[in-house]
Length: 441
Image 1 (tube, rainbow, N blue to C red):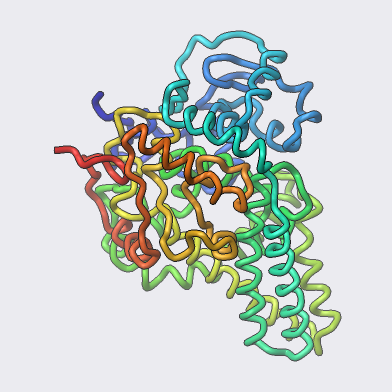
Image 2: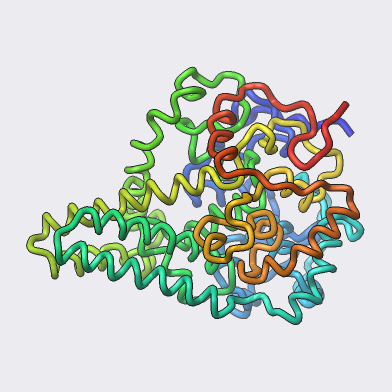
């Protein structure tokens, strides 16, 4: 099958897409609202939810959804096939879905991915199902202990830095916050739980990241529909576009740290502005960050000292968090990015393997896995499963890889870190099968 070639409508004429047929409406997306709005336009399913080639009206199920009503509220009017398949491992949800059936669709899906019963991903889900039935999918006591210990470390370091007016301790508090937030990412993929709000003690929003990360990045990884690709442009041009400027290709290591230090303050300002102008309703957890500053001001020698310590904490957080996030799993010339040749079998699970890598350094250590997005391949394939259970799924995963003749390998973290800059410099699409696929002759 020849590679799919995308046109440049609402997109960029310097690249032809190979995953999606065309650029999403209003590409590049910078906010979660833009991405959701574009997806509703492009999926074109009216007031329903699409799963495979059928439409469902889940309105009456929103408040009953075990994972939380937010997931269904924000996805109304879109194709949720990838989200449905990735979030539900058992057979029960598929049977329940039939209660809300409206009609079959007459148009093909906008998404290129398939979920055939005898394909890689469905086979993997059948293999892990009995394992997870015994283990459970939720957090273990070790996960909870690590998450809460990181939160306590952040609080104690913040209080100590404020009481002592120590910028060194503030930098350590920011580092602890970064590790805590990466760990909290494990919890916001799961059903609603209070630990996911640890995320909101940073300049992030757990609500927004459930859209941009869980629904966009996780399900459409490294494609034009991945907002974690488009929102970084033009400073990080990660798709192999032919018209990248010299500074975009080769100077990222010079300018990116300055951008990283302030980018989340800009996001916070935008969130507050959109909230107060009625674009997006403000949520209670959006004010946790200000409560943090108020507490610091109450115990500091002055408000201005508290503010400077607060800024130090969150600059340190941004630097640590984004340097982890940008280097751990997705960006290297050997990893698929939209525009590269796509595999002939567009099974969603196989395409995830092409767009993700794991690192030697963190494998097998739950603490390192939780603070650095570890076991990332299995996490992408089974995002609602707690990280503490992923290590037990490797035998079933490797057996499935062997059955489908898919070599699974690890990379060094340093290789991925350097590879990110190589990917930013790349302007020529990879015409060979990337990543886990065997090179074309």
